[in-house]
Length: 99
Image (tube, rainbow, N blue to C red; front, side, top):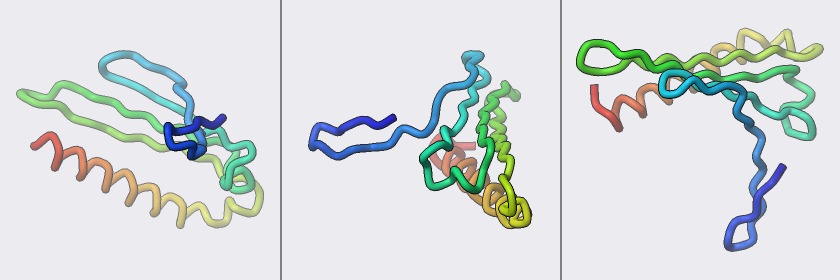
């Protein structure tokens, strides 16, 4: 699926809402067919969980990816990259919202 911006640029939409339990949980999956990740992954799901914690909230990000074929051999590298990306996302959220 793709959208076109007001300037005519095409933007791929590779993620689709899977589940939403407002306001605490939301998950979505990545459409892999015809994407650059089609040969690497058989499944990719991301989930955000927000829980009340004292005067603030605790945010948990979960990424579940199933590797396809020989790409399974790169699992440790993919897990490390995913941990780094999720950590950076949480750091950005903390900078934006405060601690």
